[in-house]
Length: 170
Image 1: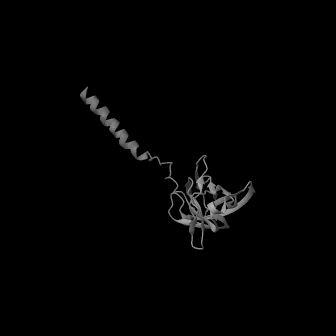
Image 2: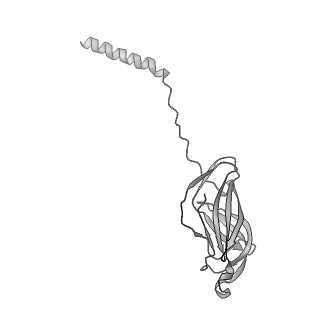
Image 3: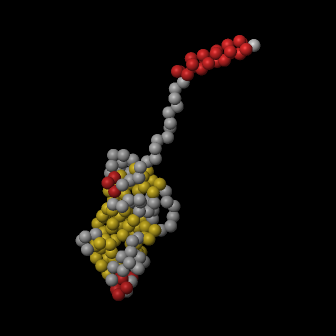
């Protein structure tokens, strides 16, 4: 009985050795996560849309100008800048509540964020302290390097007056 058991074990071991070279390893179907877009990967512009009741609305567009896919998730930062030197004018944009998707941008694709601007003239001059604005300073989510988008308007040089709000990138 011991001899037949050894023979069976040896036969099974031989079968495993014979079959093993024909088994191909299974490749993983999952690629790594798409890297986040950096300021170097994108171009940004602003498109005015419409206006109503002392508000102007537009869309900030972030386009992947790199040769690889990258992703954005969240709000990033948005503020007015002026003085010809990028000095922030007033408060940074408030974040409008809503869904916050992760957007994968292939080369040439865009994500957008709706921007709402309150007209500075609705505030008393003494409180607002009207100031010329050269444009927007834009930060991608998680980035510390900003991008400039030309958008001449009038802002309030008072950080307690909130003129801007925006949605997450979509």
